[in-house]
Image (cartoon, rainbow, N blue to C red; front, side):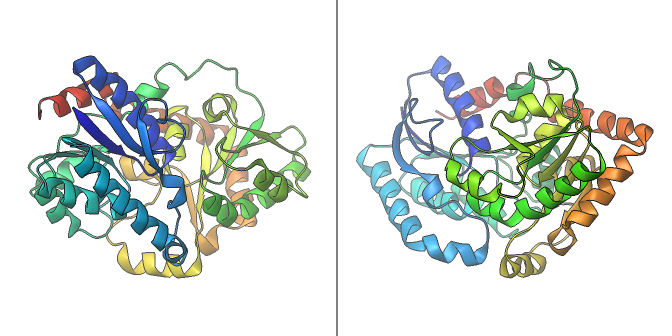
Length: 363
């Protein structure tokens, strides 16, 4: 079956790669995709989400023309190639438009990694009901939320991060490494790197025993790293996050999937999140009824890790939280154990084969 799979960022693309492998065990599929470099050898690539993937309302205006052109290209591909199955991962601004189009012409539509409608834009639940045949949320609390909101085709089968990390934890000896992860997109990094690096500088000056590692994404231009690292020569650049999540003593991480990954390694951390002032103010208006933004806190429904958002995301506040954790081994160990407890909540390995089987049953 000719199948289109659309991803909008790297963690979703990694989950899509696992799913493609499992679907190929169950039937004959020809895959087309919107992807970066992870799926390009497994699919026929029709566009790159990096051309239109940004953070913030103001920033979105700059890529509007590219997004509309890509949207048109995807719709033409669906018609021209006779796409019978569309699998959409996150990326709601783009993917809900495709879901409506694909459903209208008779394709089966699966929404895997559903939009965060529990935080904002709850009206999108009606669109999921109308334009999808199967929705697959990956956060445990979403199962109850969707059931209460009447989304009958939602099935929680576990989080695919379990499949990615199940054999990577506890391999390396812990070292005096402080892990810095300001983001995977250029815009994210530029918003979040400075308070992280300034905090790292203060900790470096006060405590001589720590090594500082910045995980810089392989897909970004190395010149960006060189430019931002000026004045912070003590920071080492690496690009294998899971190795250093396993080794690290502590992490300073931008809110996102990386916080959940680091949690499964039991890494004590401080979470920050900054974006443009316009986007932040808009988000404050739109996002309602949630107490946390980081995935470990959201899933555990308590403030296990400190969240420093926008104006609170300062070097001084990061250093203060580091010293709170560093000075109290009992607190540090307790945080680590609570975070490791997420393994029991996210589902039993393997997750992706169960997801693939549910999708195959639609055909």
